[in-house]
Length: 107
Image (tube, rainbow, N blue to C red; front, top):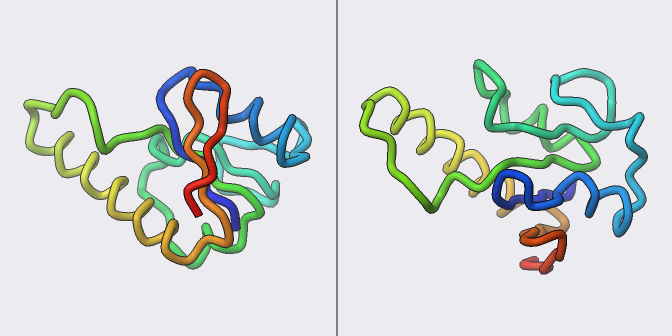
């Protein structure tokens, strides 16, 4: 599994398509049979790590920097997404951070 993280509108899906060869028709914001999952941060409930590791590519908005939500529940959700991405990154074959459409390989 390859993990791609980056800010909202940073070009993560375009990077996956142009640099990693992912086809747009193979991308989905839902946990389904398609090999590329995007918008991980929006899934409710958050999927199990083992399910995500079966995907070819998982794309998630960066949640570890920026404004910290005032609402306790939103902060907890943000932390849960961040911790899930941390676990995925540890087990991923590659991790990319995308900013301004440019990907930097972190792992």
